[in-house]
Length: 469
Ligand SMILES: [Fe+2]
Picture 1: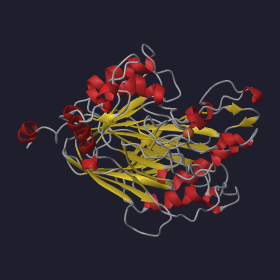
Picture 2: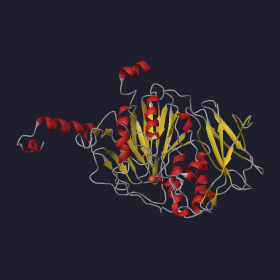
Picture 3: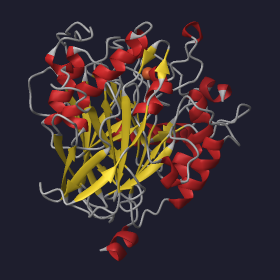
Picture 4: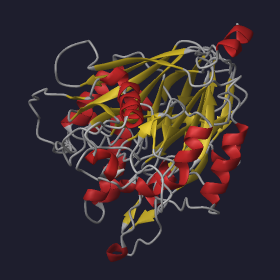
């Protein structure tokens, strides 16, 4: 190829190939590095005596109420809560009205972390729910009870509309609070949480457990009313030999159960759920994933179970992004990219959402699957079968923003900005979805980055679309 460059007349085929590659990246337009100037609030955790962490009044009143999907297809919900002083009543009443005609019992557990003793953590599985139905639930307590509600998703159907929110790296600062307040206004129905929950691991000794508790109260105003689909991040690992804590993910796994068994996973750290018209696969960046490991074997099976005729939208969640042009955490997802990227292309994944990098970035559809160490393309190239990679690690935790991107902006990067915010994915039907990224602090109600996406399975095949109606 060097000889080609030295010729006076450039090789036509080379130019043709080059222009084809350029035109495939968003019709030849380079990506955008936002020039937005933000007024950043200090990224400090909110003091524990702030009202956002308020403990419900009364003795041993249930707190830290949150829900997640409890099965593969969205007909079950897991409700969790904590009673601080004693196990207390295990009964939960629920129903389609406040008559609460149904009831279920919780299972209770507790644990220690260093010298911190957790409260009594209740899990309650509500089964055989009806689709598209509002359920009220009441958690009993000796002095008083607490009441909440949630809405079940529509029946699994390729055209079932549904709106997901995407939040990552949230923490418990004033910026985190702003993210939650903005998210609440969107009307999204389920949070896809891409890892790094409480940042309690930044504390010492017993305060680690205390900050897990405060975070549970912090998210309750949203998490008690709609499911959060959990992904584990590095701040959940909490391997702390100096405190005698050698069991990884201990606080996280005790507090945030997932329905992993329903998708035949052997670990709550990787699993999948189907909801409305989406098949959502959750991966663990911090669990073994190379060839022949349980996570690798599970994903290989799970991708074969995906039925795009029923759930057209295939979404993958992981914590460490496998494409990011931010200086922060650069290349940390490369090992997972080398293992899984070819599957993402083969199965035409629609979106890979990640966190970890405290900024926002969206890619074009591209892949880097031809490089095999000794030969092949060494640079990502446009690939219509590839997912769009989106980093939403901008929830607002105490570590602040990852403000520095590599320059020049790589061809694969479509939009990037270091601001706090969250995303929404509004699925309309089997062919179209509107994706939006919303910056927290510009005071505008319009999204900062907004794209209409075509489904990777249905929109790419006209004959299939006609057949599907
Ligand atoms: Fe992280």
